[in-house]
Image 1 (tube, rainbow, N blue to C red):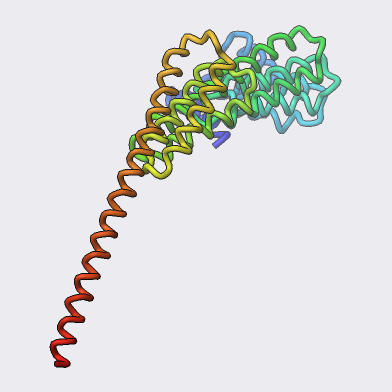
Image 2 (cartoon, one colour):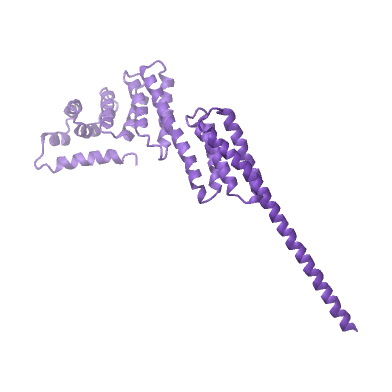
Length: 311
């Protein structure tokens, strides 16, 4: 997967060159064994911003220059060519490879930074899988640890903040999704409470904290409301407990009125649940009394028949 875009770029450029009729001077050079001239032409094309052609030449030279004095500059241009072509997946690999291979190079810091930055650029929107986001944070933090006094460290820290904001948004959106699915399965309300709490553990300073705490109260209330009466009292009491935590943390919250209504509704729900259980118990007792009476009548009738038969 990681080389697909890279191969597509090469294939597309090669196709354009191959369909241009007679061989161009570039195509002749590409097919020649003049590695020195290819190297110089690759640099010239890069500086002209003709990155697709430069990539073709650099790609063919990478193995031939391995271990030579020119290899360092070649790999530097090679990585930046991939970056300019927005092949961030391959570029980040090449930038990291450069920094690992040439740690003493004047370009090592820049390449370490660019490798992390390519991860940052490859981080998807918050609704998608965030594996690359976590990897980007790790790579950027590694750069800061290695070069704490670098001017780039400040920008790296800002990128980490942006990425963490994305992860916080995803965590909140996932929890809200459970709440929204509660109408299909009430256990999703309980899952929403768990997801919201876990998000706050992972991101203690999450910017959505106030709204998330309200949603915890709301989710628990909905979980209780849609439960069987014999489970409602305990679950409503949990909602009231979450309300108390919310109002203690945010006494002047703009959501205070809504939260108070949820608390009042929970208290009313407890009263209603107790009444329903009492009525249910009364109905059961009434049914049992009727059954007992019916059994007595049946026994009485049976005894009369037995006495009559004996006489």
